[in-house]
Image (cartoon, rainbow, N blue to C red; front, side, top):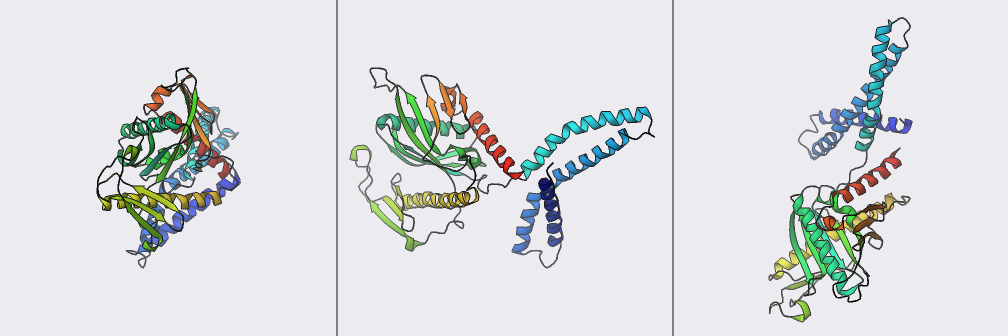
Amino acid sequence: MAIALQDKLERVVTRHGELATAMSDPAVAGTQGFVKLSKEYAELTPVVERIKALQKAERDLADLDAMMNDAAADAEMRAMASEEYYVLKGTLPALEREVTRLLLPKDAADERSAILEIRAGTGGEEAALFAADLFRMYQRYAEARGWRVEMMSWNDTGIGGVKEAIAEITGRGVFARLKFESGVHRVQRVPATEASGRIHTSAATVAVLPEAEDVEVKIEEKDLRIDVFRSSGPGGQSVNTTDSAVRVTHIPTGIVVSQQDEKSQHKNKAKALKILRARLYERERAEAASRRAATRKSQIGSGDRSERIRTYNFPQGRVSDHRINLTLHKIDRILEGELDELIDALVAHDEAERLAELQ
């Protein structure tokens, strides 16, 4: 193990001990400081347990090595020591990887619910149909994992496609599983309306935003411009005759959110503010991430929506993720919501990149 990594392990163990000492101080008990200390202590405890297991294995290995090379020991003892030595040595790399993985910085948003936004891109009606396919794909994936999907906005084309769909996906670890889906998704297929059988290429953008708490993103009323207007359906068809639709503009950033799915102006405003809060939170996260990872080559996790991340090729029955050069020939099953193989590969790649930076 690298010396720098060994030093980091020692610092973690030392910090864990310091926290235990600080928490035992009667002056700290019952204070907000105690809550903060105990949270950090609880997070470090499983890491320290595995570090100590690794350190014990390394000590045992050194003892067995000494026994193997002890000329005074009888042959049977040396043989037993040799057998145990090689068994234990075989377990050490996995234990080292586990400890190193536990040292990776946690994404504070991983356990959160998320806001999913899908928009049709280039390609006209075919892009809108593809956007609807993507939404159903994520909806099926969410249902399979026991997450709840609540529609927040659905702007359809009237013939099966969707210009924009926004939903709240609630459950544990939603953002951790879906955060790598942000980006441009491209489809190559023959549209049903294409008489000549020519393959068309179109695209849709996906954004996955961690849901923000009110206390994390404070929105001042003075920073908002709220306009109300009459809701309308596809082609301008009237949905209701009251000014219930709401458009919220966040003046400092220029972010605009419109909501008209509810008949109540109050409900539309509440939904719009929830989406605005998530977008502002993600904006802050992205800025912080870009500052921390300015030298990082991989685009995994950057949320760069200008970059094509995945292609769905219907004639060849394949889905290719361009960030990790992974191609799976089961497009139908993926669109039915079987995303775990893709997502697991993205998570593993991101983890490997961060482990490489740590060592």
